[in-house]
Image (cartoon, rainbow, N blue to C red; front, side):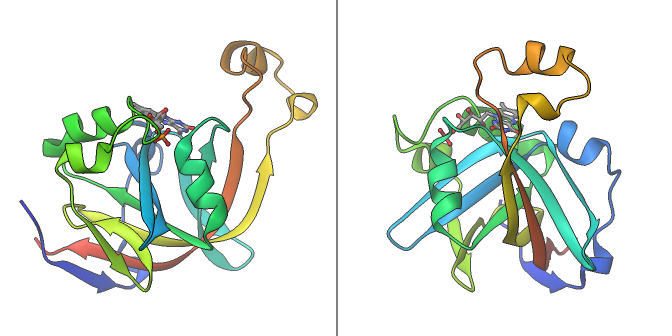
Length: 171
Ligand SMILES: Cc1cc2nc3c(=O)[nH]c(=O)nc-3n(C[C@H](O)[C@H](O)[C@H](O)COP(=O)(O)O)c2cc1C
């Protein structure tokens, strides 16, 4: 099922901020006409910083998608209806290094102002990178987190990005 996506003011984006990533999940997608990769995320946030509407995303160094995010100025964060849970699960289990997972997922990439997103998404946030920083072990005030989450020393890079535009499916 494909929806007609409509550009809206960021004020039209409403969600439960705690559940939006944790329960719904999202796809982070970056690239250009020469190649695109995507991965599922469930850690992240939307909010306000530096006078801008922003997203916070956290990407581990071994993710193939990270190379695409780092090469581009923009990427998308796409949210989907529950019907796409299996596709998101697959895209979060398999690496684009190993197979053509976008093709296998059946989802369709489209571009808006040069930024890739998925036509089947319910909500699309087009994001422009403002700041990125690798999380540091020494900065944790709760030592149990690095012990539990970063046993492989694979600290996430945090990206803070301006939400340039919002597209939502017409209901
Ligand atoms: C529900 C779910 C949430 C995930 N959240 C994140 C996340 O926030 N950050 C991250 O680095 N990886 C996360 N992952 C793991 C990546 O999606 C996964 O390793 C993916 O296969 C990477 O694909 P790539 O190598 O093609 O980039 C998550 C996976 C799932 C299934």
